[in-house]
Length: 154
Image (cartoon, rainbow, N blue to C red):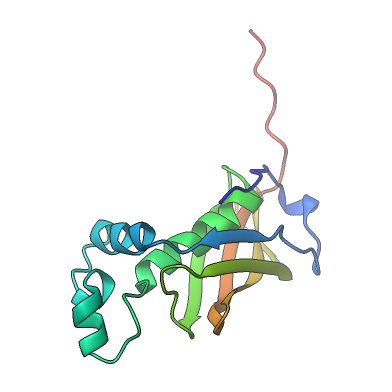
């Protein structure tokens, strides 16, 4: 699971820009660790037998882990000076161990500029699909700086 980190400004981005694809292997460890890190102790996220007794084929990823992966996907693209201001996601097909989720996205809107004149809003539509269909779809609103940072002279 690798991605290139950038440092975009508001003016670097255009409506229609595509984000680089991010492929996320869904491992049992990722599912369990994500659930524990987000204090989601529901058995369907860590106990295969109990998940199956509840009608699931196996344990599955929780929404908070998915939300974290979506945030990481967008901020790796937008850079360390970006700030997600709103995340709207909807879950679909479960992420089971052994599958792969492929995250894709594109810029669907821009604006308005912040009142401080130092940042602007960019809206990114995202999709995370696995072999069962769409695991996650939604939008992320990202605040980007207006200018490239000035170099610090020693």
